[in-house]
Image 1: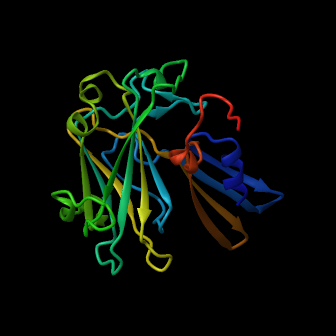
Image 2: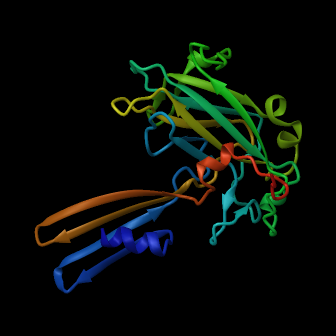
Length: 249
């Protein structure tokens, strides 16, 4: 836990330690890595129950946490994105709401990080089509990742047609992130979620930090792994409404 705490407070990529704790037989060491960087497939680290949200970043972050696409860092700019969800043998039939955030001005990844022009497109998908959810073609095709992860359903987003043609054709920085909210999944059977991009310029940026720390005390050792995602706005802002001025009776 000491190694995890150290790197959560002062994150930096690479190996750390061994750090001795008085007695030479008491120490901790580990490694910090970026999951999914330049990959095209990424499974969210935690399975979701109803109401929980997974965030997938389509632009990179710099060392201070600001959004950026400068300096050759990976940022998604392609036409096809697959949101993969659902356990292959699930008894529960889940549904998802997909929120695609984008900025046609690209000011969100500029040095000013101006988010005034950010827009969001929502999709609601269910294999049953009940409750106002859509059941688009190809939903039951599922996904099979190269590392062996598999998903029962696939929601395919055509950026050119479903979002904005500018996001497919413009320089990097128009697609920002995708949030996936799970419905109907129970605590007894949480559902997995992942993302799979295809085509040129479709590599995913880092999705956060994986921190692995091993502590040793004499002949005993224990390893702890923690995933730390990037900072984002609270989820209730996704459904908030703000007035342009103060309200009076």
